[in-house]
Image 1: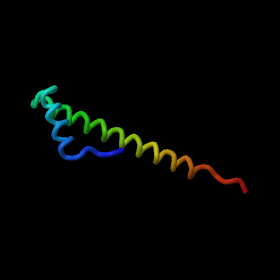
Image 2 (image 1 turned 180 degrees about the vertical axis):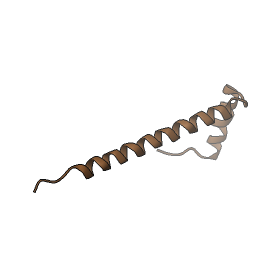
Image 3 (image 1 turned 90 degrees about the vertical axis):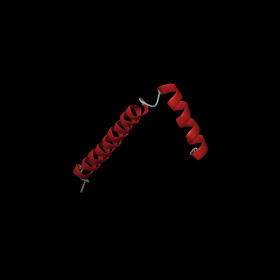
Image 4 (image 1 turned 45 degrees about the vertical axis):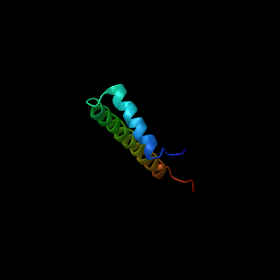
Length: 61
């Protein structure tokens, strides 16, 4: 997936400012950041749970 260049980011930001207004953008960014943090945290917890489950399984002798 190709990341947008600087001009594309500026255009996206301007469109967002027109659609949502300059006052709502920080609120939207804060909510988006919080959602991403929670998603990463849940992925980490799932990964740790899988490691714990794998370490508890004993190999047959």
